[in-house]
Structure formats: C-alpha cells, structure tokens
Image (tube, rainbow, N blue to C red; front, side, top):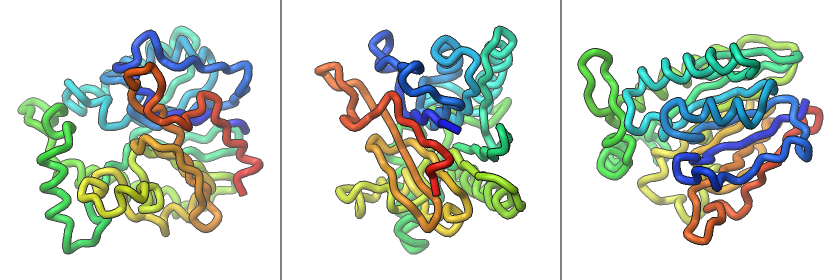
Length: 267
C-alpha cells in the first residue's frame, strides 16, 4: 500500500500558489493529511478537487480551529466530508476514530500534548508558557452553548483522552499493519536540536515512545521540518510544507509533494 503523506500545507496562507500535487508521479493508494491543512472545513473542498475518489484520511490540527469553536469546526468538517463524499470523494475525518483499509488499521486523533516533555516538575511552567504565547488560546474557542477561549488546560485534557483511546486501540490484537496519524508529535525525537530546551516545545510534542513502539508507522505534523526516524520497529515520519516564504518557496525546504511510504517497506 502506497501512502502519500502531507501535513501543514497552510492553504490559508498559500491560496492559489499552493504547491502542486502530482498524483501521476506519486501513485498513492491512500492519502494521509496530518493536520494544519486549512482553517475550518476549507481543506475538504481542496482535498476533493485534488484527490478525487482516492481514500483520504484527515486528522485536523490546531490551525483548523482558528476563528472557530472547536466542536463546531469538527462538526463542520464531518458535514463537508459527507457532502464531498456524496459527489464521489472518499474523505474521512479521524478524531479518535479507527478505520481499516485493505487489511491495514489506521488510528487517528489530533493528540495535542500533555506539557510533560521536560518532566512533571516543569509542567505548570510549560502550560503557562503555552497559554501566554500560543495563538491557539486566543483564536480557538470551546464550550458549547457558553463559548469561551480554549486554554492550555483544555488541550492537556484532550491529550489525555486521545492518549487513552490510542492506548486502548493499540492494545487490541490486530493481524496486519497499524498506522497511527496524529497532528502533534509523539516523541522528543521529533523536536529539532535548536528547540530541545525551548519551553515552547512541550506544546508541540509529548514523550510517548513506548506507545509509538506498538505501531508500525506513526505519521504526524505540527513541526515544520521533515522527519523520518524509528522507535524500535515503528517508523515515524513528518512531511510538512510550512508557511509560504516571501520568495514564494515553502518554509520547509525538504517538503516533498510526492512523499510516499510503502507499507511493505516499513519494517
């Protein structure tokens, strides 16, 4: 199975200049979109135009929530998927959802983070740092009928829910390959060396290496740098585009619009 892996396309920034996806060259069987594709539900129309009837598995990132109430955005994405699928697309939002395609199990959730990357003794410090500087907590709301701004404690709670769900799913025996898709990173190994001691990093990654080792492939986004490494037998990959530079090139110089992982070659 050929997986086309993309994340952090930030179509809200690129507009009509979005790097072209050449499906004839990459020949994917399944497309994985690991979050921060566009704000709100705007990614769905783009995905339907770009990928046609190809199966698309989509995990939303934090930027999808910008300018929206988180729960309403998630509902709007599901509705947009249903509408697109009624016209020939095959797009599925994975938000604590599992799907099996051709004998491969896909588990997807945004994941968020636990702010424990530097240990429990610095969790509160990391929470406060994220609360003060991350745009998420000024641009995303939550709370149903009584909306309020999302806060770092909210996303830590969401992380706990997503982590518990993933642990439960990974503990279930499965006779086939398992692919996990998250937006946030599952390991300190995804943090670039220049950010290894940066107090902002706990808002980007959690230390879940033991859980990662239970999968065959873990796909994430959120970092704007390409990554490809292993934790025991699990391959971890990230292929983000990033923001548009003033010269019109991607922030991530290594971004590959045709980045394919063949599951037969994962192990």
